[in-house]
Image 1: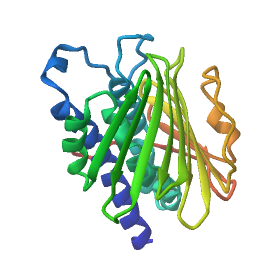
Image 2: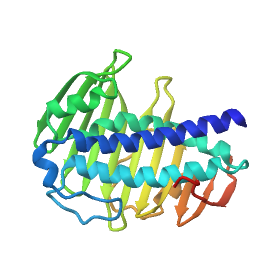
Image 3: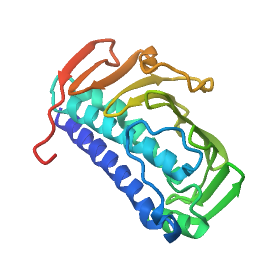
Image 4: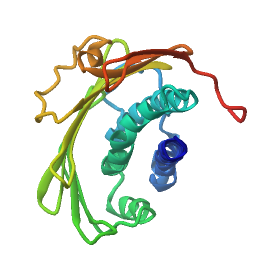
Length: 260
């Protein structure tokens, strides 16, 4: 159990680290953008002036806020701590989506920002609403992420490592907040699909192991669509409910740590 709790703490730290990376975007943004409006993790209206970078940043703020609370809540209870490990893939794979935080900021700013994450030889291409960032990671492998942005409404991304596609992500702004999915194919060939729905401070995460590449979302999915997964976790106010990987129902109260 101690080992499991240690890994859970790493998950929480990684979620916090990604949140910090999202804030580092502000430092990389051109001075001309400093007067642009910021967006919180609520439900912003569709705004065609909202950049791809700000759109994905607002979504990630909502995701990180909900997911970190679920992880912390699960890990604080001995009976549910092991379930927090289900978020390992999602938290690790978030780093594949890091380039989306910088879409539209220009190659010089993107290179400077990703260099802090160990990226080298960064190139950036922008063609209309399509953005592609390619770089060499710390392992010497070429990583590429392409995102097609429908201003203020959706961002659809595909990513590859060493020429093999391993990431598919969709994020939609909806009437209640955000509907999203993230599909990740690991190096060992195992695939996992994560389903997300966030509304303000609340949200649901569904986890499908061994999934095939999913059908595209429509952007009209209901707020509880992640519950179609056999394993899911929801945060509603301070209450965490869900069904774990063994099919067992869980319910507990999230109690913020003393330093929050």
